[in-house]
Length: 111
Length: 110
Image (cartoon, rainbow over all chains, first blue to last red; front, side):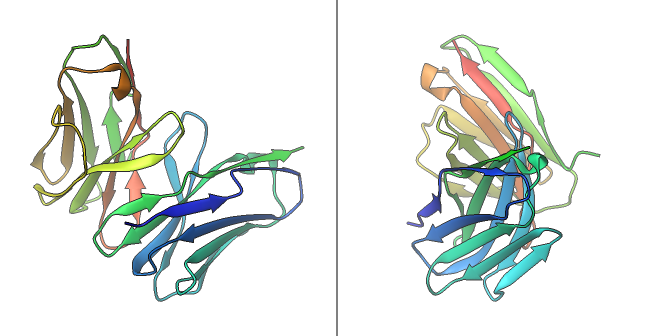
């Protein structure tokens, strides 16, 4: 059974600092890994999707890396802004088509 | 246009009632899912349908019954609602790579 862990559970930084969010998973036989953002009381917004054959994906200030063999992914957010405050969820799609989520990292960017 | 839409957005009901949540996607995706997010914000898969066929059925009480009239719709019917069913339920769809989620239905059982 795939287990996904996200560290830290919460993070508070001043505006302008870079953010580093970690995700680890127990079964390296994955199809892909997806990072989502969830705002309070809202749905999930997809940020980045990394296929198992890829090492990283970038979109604007966001960069996600994937090390499948060690079961880790890291989401970097450069030059954080108050609008980046949200919960960030890591989700791993296993080869049995299930998407397993971590518990999330709640980020607060202070103005 | 909303890609994955769920209705209703909020649902407050009494214990013992039967209720349904509807989900529709206009992305042409073949696979649809229901996820439950509990009070600790943890998302867990409940069901998955591929082209109207059930492919994933996690350990969910049989009071929960998904119904897929066509590949664009996956509805969730819940019988005899219990207090512990209170949660946010998310519908999602997938084709090939990534998932697209709906905005969720917050169910409160009183």
